Structures are given as structure tokens and as C-alpha cells.
Image 1: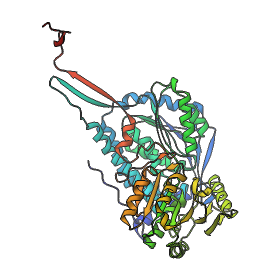
Image 2: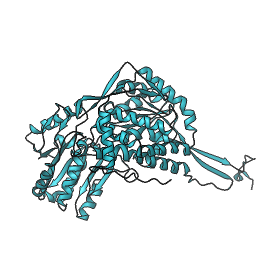
Image 3: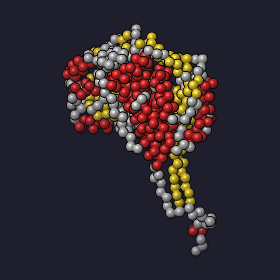
Image 4: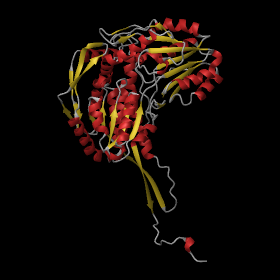
Length: 536
């Protein structure tokens, strides 16, 4: 079955899709549910709990979720291992059927539920929720099924006369630990399911700030026919869940999206325990970013302005790929500044149930505090000037205005460090220093996730593409550095941004198999002697 990308619904005023998702949003906002652990298909309630809140109205509790303790973690591991035998032997056809069924359910009766949960718990406007929670996750399910079938059918070995050679794409021994982020519901669904479609079992720890949408994904997979215990859903504190899991001898791999610091801790922990594992664990991670835009003075001003606003401020800059630093030629800046600030002044910030809001709230108080400290740092620096935004308020929700900083120092703090919020820093360069500026872009940040170049000069674009070859795993020409689509732009970066294992392609799924080579000899030798042993 050939996969195609899920069409994005527009949610225009008075459209059925808008009316329906608004109803589900209102229903979900007016109730508080209880979210259990799901281990071996059973709902488990613990003494330790946390809250799912609305970031745009942090007094409103959406759910109380139960946290896994060491006892539940061990139970989940045991369940995974018990189910591994049967699931690892389940045919690729049956495994793919389940995830295609999940895609159909999400495209249909589950679409409003998952979108509404994402809007409420992660403070996403309907468009950002739609392209993420619905479309991208549908694409992950459908395309991963196709990728898995393609991989399992690939037999490129030479078989000389008398020999039959074969590749067997086995799952990993043990379980995969999936640690998922708050910002993308689709990533939360993909990280446990990608290894599972290849015959693995998975232990899934969702981000504590987005348990609601994760829970509904788990229920969706159950309805789609996923057998009990193949994925176990265990929200909880990272230190409690992670430390127990990472030291277990049956750890087969880690599928991670989150902070660079956390990923490095995971890697160190695995390294410290390396002699204890049954197999060397696969480590796949997508971490931080300090994503760039470098503009040539041949850029179209309106196109550049649009790329900056969308790239920096969609979903409050809480995308690993969000534009966080921009390099603008001095000679086009006066015109660009006028267009950019004029357009930015029309951007509205508020709750996602007001469909006129382009931006919503940042995820929680911790994020709010971290982001606003960068803003205050810029306000107090003689090397920077804030030309838009700079204001914030957490009385009702964690709202931060789209903030633009101009700096005279290309090595300024907000040009180097990941902020993960609606803050864009601009460095103005002399247009005759194109190649020098490209070098600065490459060397300023330890990250290498995404970046873009804007301009109409083909030679300049070619130079940027070549000079920034290792600066971004996803590179965009005349477009914002966000919006990777499954099957079109496989996603991932290197350096401090991760292992670049390209979610949304076969490359990622290949990490979740351990290949066995099988040689069948059809004419087995009956004499040990080789021809060279013959006498003259």
C-alpha cells in the first residue's frame, strides 16, 4: 500500500471541522479526568500523581495523572519482556495492519479528540495542532508501515550457484525505552511506535507536561488492535523511571527527543553500565537546536519577513527547528525592518480557543521563567536592543510576546544558547562579508539541527549550501527552517542536536532491527581437501 501525506484541514470559520473540534475542545476543557498507567493493557493507579493543566489558563486542571514508581517500572519491563516473544514473531503484515488501522482511526473519529487534547494541554492553535497531532502522526503510522514492508522485503545479497543467501530483519533483544517531548504529539506517538512496528516492544515515558495527548494516543493504539504489553505507558518523574530502566540488563535501545543535557546523561548512564547489558543498546536521539536563517541581500523582503515570523514564532518558538538567530545584510535591513515590524504587530497572542490567535502560551512556569530571563538579559545588555515584544505575563497563562533582539555581537548569548521560546535574535552583517558570515553561522553554536538561506542569487545560495553542509541536518532554501514532512524531509540533526537518525524515513526504522545473515548451502562439501593440496 503506497502511503500519501494526510491533507491538512483548514478549519475555516463555520466549517464542519471547526465546529466539531470546538465542541470537543469545550467538552474536554469542562471536565477533569484521571489518567492511569497502562501496563499489559491494565490500568494502574499509584499513590503519586501529577496534574495536566492548560498553559494558557494554568488554574484549569485537565487531568490528574498517576506516576510510575520503581515497582510499576519493574512491572512494565517484565510485561514488555513477556510480550516480546509473541510480538517479535508477529508477521510484518499483521504489525503494519495495526498501525494503518490507527492512522485510519486518527484521520476519522479520533481526530478531534487528539487535536483538542493537544490544543488544551500543549497550548497549540488549531492549525499547529492539526499539522502535528493529526496529520504528522497519521503520516508516521502510514509511512512507517510502508518503510517497514520495504525493509523486510529487501534482499540484495548475491547467491552463487549452490548457495542461497538471505537477510532476516530481526527486532532488538529486550525492550526499547521511548522518552517523548511535550511539544509534538506526533513525536510522542512515533517514538514508541517506530521500534514497535519493526517487531520490538517499548516502554513509553511521556513528557510530564503533555500526558493528556499521550494518554489518548495510547488509547487509540489499543483500539487499533495493538496487543497488550507491546507498549506500556508509564508517566512519571525522569529520575525514578529513567534510572531504573537505563540500568536494566534487557535494555535494547533508547528512542529520545528532548534536551541535550538529558540525552547526554542517558548516554553516560548507558556507558557506565555497558558491561551489564545483554546487547549493546541502540541510542537514537534528537535534542536541542539553535536554528538559523542567513539572508542574502538578493532576498525578497516579504518572503524573508514571512519566513522570520513563521519560523521564529509559530507555536511560541517551542519547536526544535524554530528560527532562533538570523543574519541580515545591513543594506536591506531598513526596508525589511519596516515590513517585518508592521506584520509582526498584527500577530495576536492568547488562548487557542480564540482562532484569531497566532500564538498561545508557553508550556509551563519553568519554561516561562527560563525564556524571560533571556529577555531580561537582553534588556540589560549594552550589546543588544529589543525592537519588538519584550513583555510577558503569567497571571492567567504563560504568555510571552513575540520578541526580537538586535545585537552588535554575533557571539551574543541569545545567538548561541537554545532558548526554546518566542525570541529571535538578529545580527546585521556587511553584505560584502558573505563568506565570513557563513563561517560565523557555522561556528557560533554547538547545534546542527535546522537552518535556512534566503536569496535569489544562485551562486550565493550554492555557496551557503556548501559552507553550511554540517551546520544543519535539515537545510531549507528560500523557506523557514521548520515544517519537515514525513516522507518528504526526514528530520534530524548532528553535533549537539542528536544522532541524525532521520525520523520520517527508512533510516530511522533500520536502527530498530538487528540483521541476521542466513546462508543455506545447497551442495554441502563432502571432502575437506581443497584443489591446491593436489600433488604435481
